[in-house]
Amino acid sequence: MERRIASMHPRLNATYNDTTNVWEGTNGWEQVGSLLFHEAAIDLSGYSLQDMTFFPAAVGVQDPGYYSFKAGATSPYSGVIVLDIITSVPMDMATIGTDIVANIGPGMLGNIYEFETLLFGLFRLFTPNTNIALPDFQELQRTQRFDSGEPNASDKLFSYRIVRTLQTDLDDNSTVFVPASRHLVAGLFDEESELVYMQRLKRSYELANQV
Image (cartoon, rainbow, N blue to C red):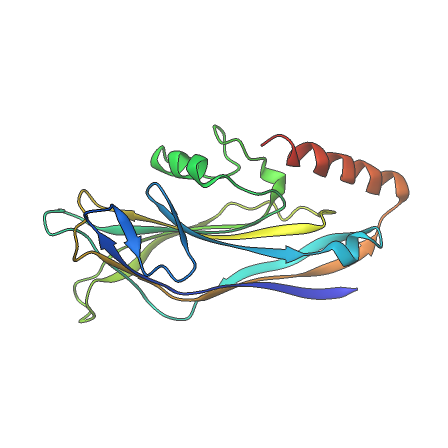
């Protein structure tokens, strides 16, 4: 059966508190170190109870709106990294944050997450465009997919929206604005042969317990 599943993420409109080193007004987003992130779950238990496997056909992100970021007054540059991820295993944001600093993406060599667990992965880099008369507007400079699109027999998927600001300094005037978004996955739920399905379940269990 063909299905389209979705997860929703709220906008991020936060102001930095230089005294506490915390972003405030995050609207459900969480902060771990230098990362801001929002997590949503996609329940597939009804299909897994019927021993069905999900075969993704098309994945993507919808985020109508604009990105803006204001670094600290003494920072010589600013930028924003955005990761949109749908995965079959939960992710540790401290690990992701360390890897982003090291220029290592999820599922790549040096990262603890397996490529096949990533149903969807999109990297985007934004930097300022001062030719547009919108305060602190950030323009897309690079985009790159890093997902496998592998079939999946998990009973839950994890949808992440991750933001890391780039700067040498943040102060009480620093702000970051990211639009609300929707992660979409279209695909087919179908039954596999018993042996193939059992092997897929075994592999899913092994991957879930590696991290």
